[in-house]
Image 1 (spheres, rainbow, N blue to C red):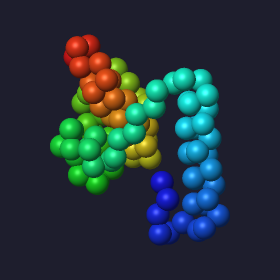
Image 2: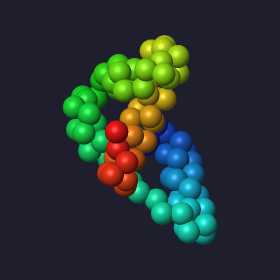
Image 3: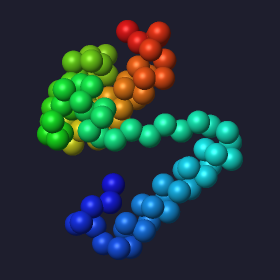
Image 4: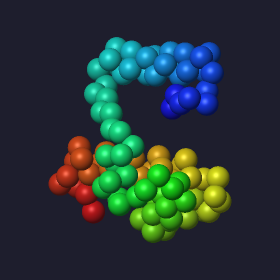
Length: 96
C-alpha cells in the first residue's frame, strides 16, 4: 500500500498494478469487493499491531498453524483474516 516512505515510482507501480487487477476483474465479469483495513480489523478486534493478526489467525485456523508460525508470516495471516471477513460478509449463511 502506498505510504509516505515509498517513492513516486513505487507508488505509481502500485497504482498501475491495482488498476490492472480491477481491469482484469471487470473484463472477466468478476465482482470485486474492497474493504479498508480498519473495517476488517474492527471485526476481529485487532489493532495496527501485525503480531495480533498473526495470533488471531493461529487461533482461527489451527490446521494452518505452520503457515503462520514465523513473525514474518504476518502478511499471510492478514490475508487469511481478510478472506474470512469477506466470506462472512458475502456469504453470511455459510460462516462457521
